[in-house]
Length: 236
Image 1 (cartoon, rainbow, N blue to C red):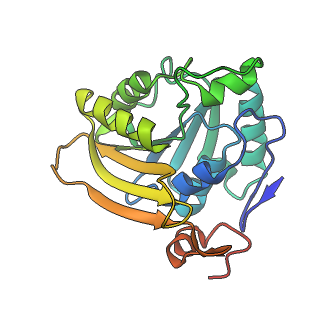
Image 2 (spheres, one colour):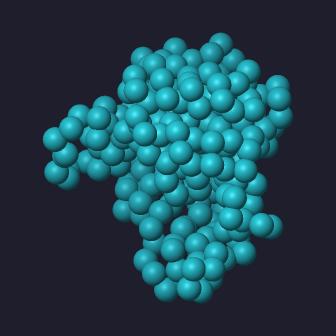
């Protein structure tokens, strides 16, 4: 079990385990004036729970996943959290999900990204890592269908896959509005891209860099500020 400042996550039965990627996206996603949020591929429910903590009580958060085990675990995590009334988990693929009448203001996803690599023998390990059941094209297409005109899409991906996602996004009428490059140390290669897209082409992308460690095992001030409301070891 992973304990955060305001909630705990059990993920022993989940294919998609708690990790830095989900925590980064949950803390980074822009929730300003967002009333209806969708978490695609919720896994243990980590990102949905982080967004529940960050948003007012009148916000509703739907979380969907194709794994029955993950859905059951996320549901239990939601019920044990301080926000069971604003969270709902649904056993459904994004391709078949009908959404809500008004559309979502924000859609978030820590999506699978392995496309041509060797697949592990167990199917439950394939789903959260490989694009077999959720391609980038499908995520972009159905996020567009399920979101409002002003809706945003936020994802986290490795650098190569993230740049590929950006190229595909423009063909689906999604335009990058924010991009944060994440590195473990300033001298290290880029490990992840945090990306936000909108349907209106502003022709400008806000770009930043986020470094995990300032030196040795000391977190950078930027990382501490981003995660200060979640990690127990963060005393800011």
